[in-house]
Image (cartoon, rainbow, N blue to C red; front, side, top):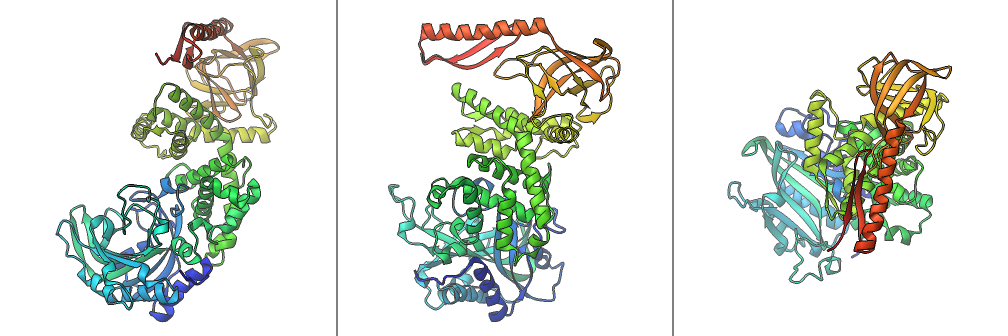
Length: 638
């Protein structure tokens, strides 16, 4: 197949130039990824979003024909490609949509003729390999689009047998649950039988809209005729319109003759940067391509989001930005990248796209700063969550379970800021799944319990974020070292130190009072934090002066690690008024610790005897080690 060798930037510009110079269109710059005045959308997810009011007849423009390349994000709602990103060569969170529009001007005849001319004459795609699909309503409620079919058959060199009809799922386009919509005509390219990935499947037949990779959808021509006002009701639009969309990344891969969007020059600078960091050769990269694809995609998406004013956060669009940065960072760690690296990825993105999208260059400093800060925050807050998740999954597999409990997944998110998407990634890598319905139920229960109005998410971890920020402040002030709290539960059971922070109801306070549930941060502690089935230590923290406790007392009932480098004592103020800056003495309940130690030893003895009696295949699957009891779970095939 002979194709013109054009760069991605040249292909974008040739599309725009064709419609401006050959078809009288006006070039309209891309709108922001944040839709203006449309509460139904989280992000701009198609080229027509900025023209929605024109289609509805509530806005008029000084032009009736438009062309552009629109920045798009598809990570939520009706159009959500997130789960497919990294698994294949064609899906993206951020992508560019090439499009041309008619607002009550030309219609099907001209749209089809121009599409055919651009594809075959300008870009040189072989006519015999192009197919077109048209709409035929399986319910018989909307007329069959014979008009579009006839226009396709009339194109010079088009094979009339290459017109196919499909129903609502394939050939009726809707941007969202309500709004402008209409029948569409899709253009597919036959890449050849060698691209079929189902050749070993008995009875498989390659076909358009089939389940193999031979036929590639290139361009969707939507003929806007209706406005959907409800699930069952369509109203005719005041005038008929044309809305077309073609993914830039996909057509670039075709014209550059590569088998992956990620092998085009749109991604090459980014992948070159990543390889320079990992030291992998090109062959080694392709052998382990999934993390490279995820990072290249997510790094590009985050760069464009920040340029459009969307910074990492815990709700809505800000959550998405945070989530994709953290997902990229996590895949980076799988490549051995443990220090912030996404700023270097962003530099490559800015270099590649900055000329066409000047906002990237204008906001370069904000982009690099936000990426680096979020990567560091991720390392501090989520490290403990990933370790805890690994522990949970290991125990699940030992018990023969396949689905992680939704409440456990939510606890990872609420305590450590571990996004559900990352929990799901880690689980699936081990052949396991996550109860997402249970996760949502636990989230809603938490929301109602905390007052019903807190906009958590879908990312929790406000607790982890707060402690990570507190840790950073204390390190800058010289109150804590680079490793954070000195934690040695196998050393002294009594430790002295300054009260570095008090937290009540999730908020840092300068003092606490009798009856308050409080979390106490000290520079060092000997209290054990629950792990591996062994419960946390309990004890007391008292004010400490000249070797004697006096003034106030806190009963410690639990311990936890809300963020990497942070260990906090959870308890209740029994008497007095503890204040930040007070000297304190923290004492573990020695008798209770000794009881726990005895039961801990008992589990090891029990395990040894089980293996002696039942055989070496008897394996531990979990345990509970408390002061007054123990439980030992094990697997045995008989």
